[in-house]
Length: 363
Image 1 (tube, one colour):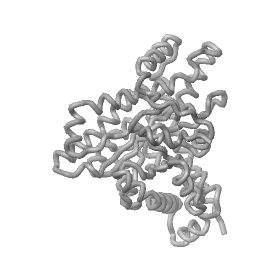
Image 2 (tube, rainbow, N blue to C red):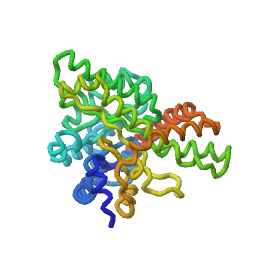
Image 3 (cartoon, rainbow, N blue to C red):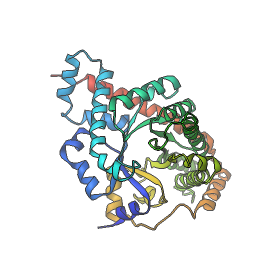
């Protein structure tokens, strides 16, 4: 049995589980992962909740009771998801306190149909924050251009945010700027910053999936296959380190602020010819989060080979990879624009499916 999960955790990477369900909460499987697999947080999204509610009878009684009270399907979904997230927050409370509020975090996402609506994203972010009413909650906001002002405003209001659907370093820099602006507004008003945290979720495997398909059309068996996603994350970490060393950040840190941490998401390998642990083992550096589906967690536990920091020595190599991709005809800006739109569309579809699943529950 590999000790890689413990080594990863000791290296400064927080291991979070990308999954949540009432089944996990009631069966004790989440507690088991906390106790045995170094899991110190949970992320959720509409796809996860859709699968959880459609795959279990544990929600049926609540759905019927809430419907009998006259609740709309949308309100029922909100009640079910916030209830599960609240329970998970309670489960992770000791982790939250022991980690000085850094970990023990649970995320819930605003309605993905609001991804291009700043004001509604802010309103729902506040509403979810108040509904769950737990200090270790993170509100997930997409990193669309319309999402950036929402990130700033929620941060300025003291709400901790998980920024999701980030695909490019360029957009990540805007995300960090939005977070810092929110913190700066708190400092200017004399408000506390030490209780505000944030993570910025980079989607990893989807980049390789899209670029590999394009490379296959250009040059089958290209040596660039499977290189883009990790290189992109490496350069994102470099951008994070630059901000961490900036005078702007150091000034905020002096006021007790917490730097927004990079989070690696979409870490399950989609191309089965690749090592199933690559989006974990190749993305090790201090102050990162890696949120994994349980399958990936199990793979890392069983045969992951920990090699220490695999990011900070790779900046130059990552830039060369992107030079080579451009030379091969890959338009990376076009790729990430597509992936952002596609990501929003997939979450919207999952949300609609979730509503349909709840609507279909009968006596």
